[in-house]
Image (cartoon, rainbow, N blue to C red; front, side, top):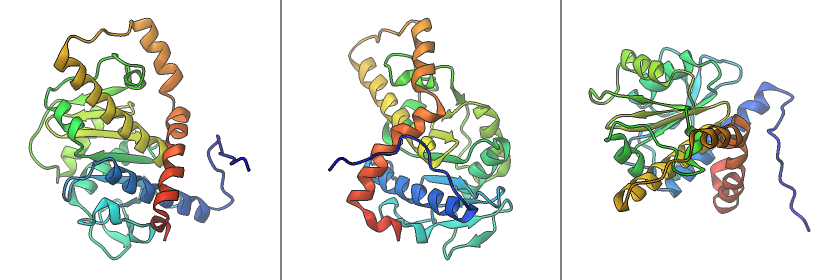
Length: 253
């Protein structure tokens, strides 16, 4: 029997259906982040905007390991930081950063941030990624650098500065901190983070043994147009969704 895989984003008849879909993808992303080693104690958060209450977002419970998060554990937070739905507390840094990202970028349905090893290592250099691989070209002229570090982000003003640095790009490197990505779906935001982390790893490895050869600007731009679109980000996440759904179906509870 041939398995059919959808190559187009889902459509919904009701906001409730869309909310459930977003929450399922959010819980799946936490499981995947844990599987890939993107968890670091209590650090890290992924958020998705609620389809009905668009100034509210769903986020992971503070202090719960990514590998344990299920749909029923997710909490809904409003624009003031109040917990509207859920039985857990929210990470103060998650609210300070993500609330300002969602506010500044109405198109950003989801945002992802974690203290992944290669992302935080690369961030300490205070540099953008270079177009040295096809995958890195997904971020060519489409990521920024927040060239500052003043401690853990708990204040909304710091979140506003990060949002300003992000601008209209899909990702921002937070110096001495790590990576942050956004997308028009949980799928794309999570994928951009995963592939950006791997691009950081690839550049660190390449520079450890020599001087990488840059892809010429003309072809870097072309490759970005081919692989860096919102659809390509969504599509690249689908095999991971199928994998985690098969391996850890309990996240859907």
